[in-house]
Image 1 (cartoon, helix red, strand yellow):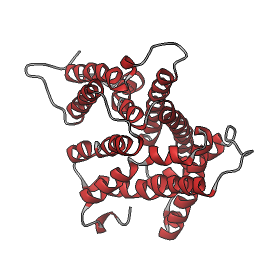
Image 2 (cartoon, helix red, strand yellow):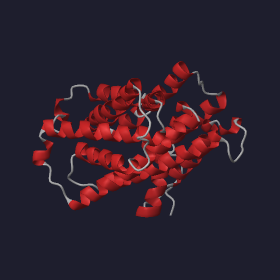
Image 3 (cartoon, one colour):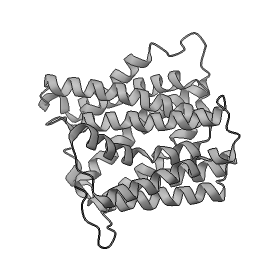
Image 4 (cartoon, helix red, strand yellow):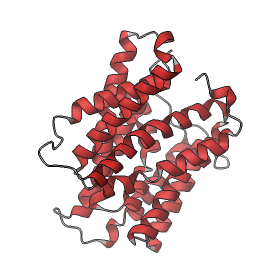
Length: 297
């Protein structure tokens, strides 16, 4: 972005953006609309904000729209819409903290997707970190403390959150393949396509209260617009280890908010599961190695 060089404190900007992003679960619950409707309006308002941003910045005058990039952006948008719909359902059926923690399985699903689809090689260290993380997920989900029945909404909420993480893998892989297109343009297209896809399932029959409109507009403008622009602007200016560590600000804020506002503290078992996920994620992102281990053939 043109404004990237003008950022004086990129780490502070990224930290604030991640902290604000941690409030999205509260916005979704306070809106009081079903998941499909909530995500539709988030996408719609987000697309409008990003279009206005690109217009004001003159991005449309310099960007070259390529067919391949447009198709990848559209596919990424469809995956993102599915991700948000499943994640918001997870918020409602479990808790903000639980869904946020389970969603942290995303980096490991991304690694597995790279192996399955791109032929990436897994190192033994990565395999061990993933095993540790996937042990942590069911512990952190709280499912071990809930009556396990097929119709249990908590279990379904956890499953939907895992599906959200898998859908986000699809978004990431599409975005990684986009070349020469400004990220804000990609995000705008994603949001627009998401709105189109979710318009098929959104509820337009029931009226929405003024208070709910405030939360919906906030999600679109703040979380899908301002926060995303702020985050992407800092990435080129910060080393990967710093970004990897700071990314935990998002779940930390979400967990704290769920506890203080909604009265959902984590159990000791969930805290232990979260600890395993955090350590494993840092191990993969920072390439921590186990002594004497070599790459898998």
